[in-house]
Image (tube, rainbow, N blue to C red; front, side):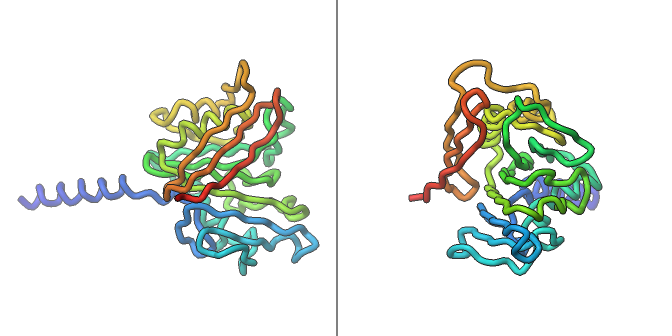
Length: 244
């Protein structure tokens, strides 16, 4: 009976672990948020490390007390599952880092890839899509994720937490912008659309050269993603529609 009870408790513990996801957008306090927008100020403002932060709870822009390179700020908190994965690879976690201006040791990227930068992280429950404008971010497999070269200019970040099912569509959007994946680990059981992006092997072969898709966040917010292939126009943009 004792061994059976131990086995039951272990199975319950594994079940709870499987159902819980920490792959979510985070604020400066490490709290879960459905989405955030960040505007990093240029270098002439406090050396280029200060930033304005906004999520659903802030009521507008707020000047953060943290620095963009802080180990306690929104970036470090949001990317913690990735940094932990570098130390100890865990089953059921996947990521794609894409950037047309990747960090060392990567060199110049072909102009056939889209002018786009971002981070995708997910497990089988939830994930996040962090779209940003920063060259050489994040640094290659280092806990010091912020590149000093990012201090000079203003930069923007948009993070949205999505349920796992939405990442099939996100994978297709990334194919349309022909994202340059410089680092990735996508389990073979995950959406094939993401595997294609990770391998840099999929992009539009025929018209239309753009794709518009409404994506629903984990909290039910609606985001419309506009993805455009290089033969139409590079880039991506977002429109946020409040839930009615």
